[in-house]
Length: 409
Ligand SMILES: *Cc1c(COP(=O)(O)O)cnc(C)c1O
Image 1: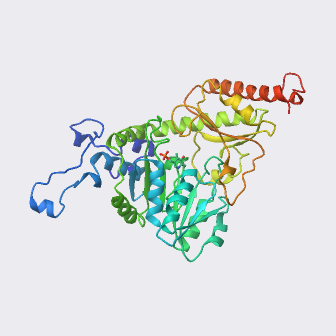
Image 2: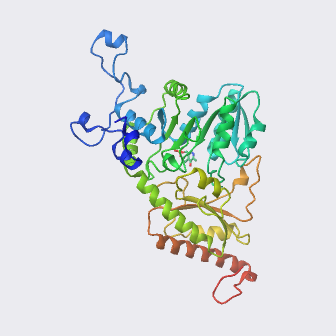
Image 3: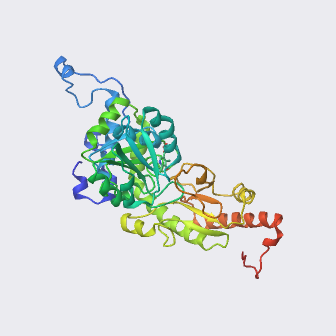
């Protein structure tokens, strides 16, 4: 089904890629192939590796089905799959970097990626320099003789800065550097990373590909020039996903566009509603015109998903946030997102940023909007905001409302 990408739209492709009923006695889905040993028929086949599959670590039909499907969706020359999103980040970095190289990392990057750089890459003599994610073409001033890789993540983890990806990849190409993007938030459906010039694109399949909070997976796709090196690095490490996990990911793939559409509409509905609540100072959702980076998002992205942040007004302190979050009826507190359930967590980027300041002027919360009834979600959030207000008011009576029924601060 290789030609699907040329003749069918994305939604049709998602239903067809990575499976061939003719190979499975007519059954619709690719089954779970578990295997280490592959039997060769003749000495000649064995000695010349003449077999479709040669050994478990080199791939199975289940793994390959997912790899080929993802390559088609991402517009990539090839894809490899790791057991977690963070594993995929490490794999991509190990593909383009060597000892002595200089790496440019956005200050808004996913925090465990920073830990990977500090704890592992630094040990192998890679120089890591963080840059302002909003630097755009200004990145050129940071390039040194030993710079080999520019890493991007857009929007930034938790803080939602949108990067000028084309401006950065254009400079990287002109200077012979590799670019890696963590594209987890948008997925290839809402951001065409390779079309925008990125050499490697990472997706934490744990999020929207799995979609049900029961799967850990990472995918790295590559353009034509970078694919051989990515595959070689992958085969050297042999950190493969489990067969059942690939089966679940292929199942998630079929409905990914529907879940993303739902995440988009619900996310925008709740974000817009939150922006009107008197306790909220700012909503950081790239699809809202009030969000910094909105114009870049509109120019480069095809959609938005269900993860965004909000900043509370400055009078709300940590105890008040705890009063709000400890008693939510629907929203759970948890880190991984992209599932069917809504989540909310407090966060503070100032704990780890090194070249930019995170001073939003109030405490920050990150929300993931799931598939629940949005009216239920608004009621849950409104009750939480009431607890926030009441907690502060109990300790600081001067915050009492000043106009009839409407809370004014
Ligand atoms: C969740 C996430 C990852 C890591 O995925 P895991 O499967 O949890 O390791 C990487 N990057 C981003 C942007 C993520 O949100």
